[in-house]
Image (tube, rainbow, N blue to C red; front, side, top):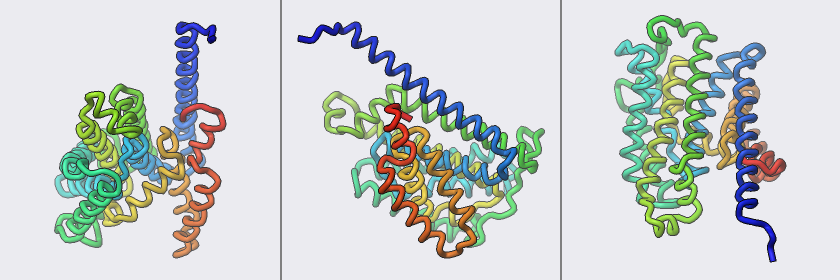
Length: 326
């Protein structure tokens, strides 16, 4: 017969929860400190690329890692926002903050439409619908006049933030990207640990049971899809301003594959995994560029090794070792 009381059990659970939150806060502090200090020794433009892709991967992870929805077409949100932001800044003369906001809103609207069409299906059918719709967006981007076709939209002006801060200065641009990335990451953190996030994870684990409890699972999944699309769009719109370019690469199916790779490599279903995965992939692309066509093969070999050695992803394995959720 057990002698433990319910009060002691609840106290133990509370202590574990507090410890888990402390671990997450420490990990967040380390990440923030790294991105604050890194520009001193690392090229800021490279770090901005890492943060843009990290936000993209975190947005995708919100959908697959916490919602259980595998999208093979998430590049459509990043790419469409990049085109919208670049066109607004270059042709319409929008300030950078308005251009980024406009691109993000375009991705949200696209997410509402695509989500309404795809969310009624599950598993591979959902993935195939998102891939098909993403290919439609790709061919539209290829044919539309305002996108510049294969040349894309080039020489996008960075402009002046709020009409005062000149973003042609890399450090000023870095500060803006840092704030956007941190804000997006904290939003995802809040969503994951909110009642909405808990219901979303319950749907991932057992949708039939969540339905039996009275939750409108399609509505929850649609909201998660739109939120993920918006954050992916925020990453794409920011990237277009940073690199002063929006191209077909941003909407190509291979970009959707890359974000899947980043998420799996870092640790699906973890908060910090996509950030680590994005840093690894972007670093490989940057430092292995001299290998030419062998870059893809090298990435494949490294990915296979990592999957075999780190089945939960890099951060997932670390969290498993210390028995704390990261």
